[in-house]
Image (tube, rainbow, N blue to C red; front, side, top):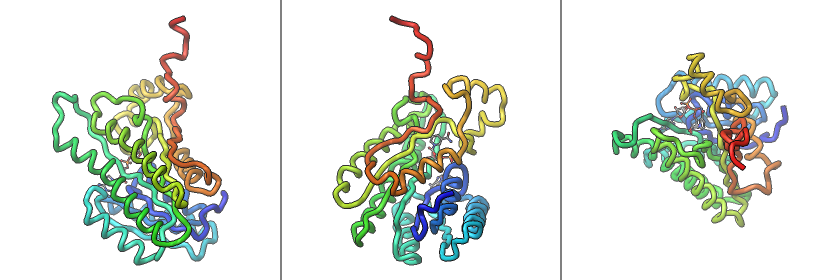
Length: 269
Ligand code: NAD
């Protein structure tokens, strides 16, 4: 394991489970101090914190620290409170990972406005508010900063019956590009990762059902779902100096899902 984040401070939203948990662990393995944001799952956040501490111990990162902050990223006062607490503790933030996200299926003609608002609120408005606060901090001191957003293949592939989710990730693409362009000349890079189908709690409806899992995997050119660790590695790359000339991009980590799999075999001239 490299130690690309030695002495860096990283805030990961939605880090009490799934991909966010793996991201927190990966950054800790590479030497970062990690702030774990979560909304409800105290036990999950405590488990992530324990993993971060063990990674610090294993790597011999004596000065690295872990913070936990319970905050709903869709709520502005909670977001402001979180940045105040994290910056109050560390004095400096180097990397923001906007990972928190939710989804809820519904046929669009029967869907509820309240669900649309809630999903957009967490996935997109939360990303906007956290990014704004991070950028405000990055601009307040020398050295710039990095934001990496957790988007999805549904940034570009429509997801029927998940309209608010699809819309939130489509919006995230534009948010990523717009912020990247607006702050490119001030040392701030903004990118996104677009995961495909990853084994996390958000996908419990097919992970534990062998038949449903086979159906999911049959759509993926590489023939398998991805693991959180494979996604965390992409976040670490984009946040690192190895990606120093990359901004405004979404890097899809999806086993080929964005390659129009239905065109695997030629069916038209
Ligand atoms: P998950 O359900 O395991 O984790 C979601 C995390 O977000 C949890 O830690 C949860 O506590 C947190 N969260 C939810 N609402 C929050 C709020 N209001 N404020 C703060 N935190 C909140 O799901 P996951 O699969 O790990 O998803 C993480 C991200 O990855 C999401 O943005 C999701 O859209 C994206 N993603 C996941 C997949 C996949 O297949 N798992 C694919 C593409 C994109």
